Each structure stands twice: as structure tokens, then as C-alpha cells.
Length: 260
Image 1: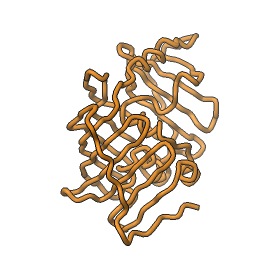
Image 2: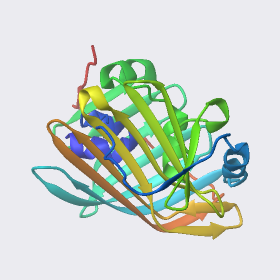
Image 3: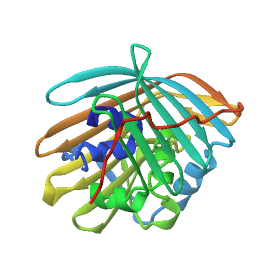
Image 4: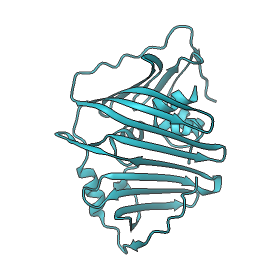
């Protein structure tokens, strides 16, 4: 069940598979320390913000953990800042579906005939990490999970990338990597060293549209004491500003998941 939820909720999944986050591996590459944070890098990152009303993505997805590997397809529909519908299919059969709005999270999965219907506060408490609609949407469109304009960061240059590092909390470290040309997000890392957890999101190719630049592939690596989980998404077909429907209903007879 959890592998389908992971593919469906994408962000939540990293954590719903109990893959919250491990200490970032040491990087021995030369770093050029920037004494004063250049806010231009952050401002330029948000200059790339996609301008769209709806976004439709057909993707291939792969889930890998210590015990199994699964290839599926994912149908992702986004009405900007309002709702996200994700359908996960295997051999053309819908195995899981999730509807995410700013105030609610709902999903069902076919393997165990279960469903969840609740809000982000209860889900975040259960997962042990703050989760909201913006984080899920940002992850899918290649924006930083956090609003970089509201944070304070140490800035360095690592392998020709701007690295913005937030270490206000000694047990929660966040790093965001922007390319030095277009300031697109290339990678972000969240680690909890004391709990030996790490979450890394890396973006591959991107494509330029009239609405802006969108990544066409991403990889989520989540490491924890019990093992490693990898989720790959490759966007095969992308369209903007079509009139989309967001059909979602839990099949009859499914059992509700209660989060305490």
C-alpha cells in the first residue's frame, strides 16, 4: 500500500514510507564561501515561477526500496493553488488516487481497499514533518519546498551551483541548490542528523514553455535507518491551461484509515 501512496502523494510519500530524512553525505568538493548572501539568486529563482491556470502531466514513475521495485504510470492534474489530482495506474488499472487541496488530503488505494480523508495538520502530525499544499505543488513544478524569500541562509558555491543552507535548527538542516545561469532549482536536501534521516530531491532535464520552465524529470531519495527509498518521475506529456476535470470518489466498501 505505502508504495502507491508514496507515488500518489509524492511529497507526503517520502515521509509516509517513513522516509523523512538522513545526514547529508560529506562533499569534499571545493566551496567558495560568499560572505554576504546574494538575494539576487533567490529573486531570480522566483522570476522563473510558472504562469499557468492548469497543468496536466502524464508521467512514468518508478518506486524502489530494499525489498521491491515497481513501475507505474501517473496522471497528474493541477489547478494552480487550488487542487491536485494524482492517479497511479498499473497496466492501465487505477491502483491509487489522491486529491489534495490547501485544506484537505484524500486518497484511496486498491491493494488493501483503504482510504484516507483528512487535513494537513493531522497528516503532518502522523508523518512527523510539516506538510502543506504548497510543498506538494512546488515539488511537482520545480520550485523550492520552502519560500526562500522568507528565510536566512548561508550561501556558498558548490560545483557551480548556488547552495543556500539553512541551519537554524541543529537537528533539521535544509539546503537548496540553484544553477548559476537561470537560477532553476537543481537539488534540495533535508536532513535530520540525530535521527540518521535524509531526503534529497534532484531535478534533471527541463523544458521551456510559454508559461515558463518546467522540469521534466525528478528523483526523490529518502534514506532512513531501515533502508532507502527511491522514486523517479519522468514527465512524458505536458499541457497547460486546458479545461480539466478532477473526478474523485472512494469506491464503496473501502475501509477508512484512522490517524491518531
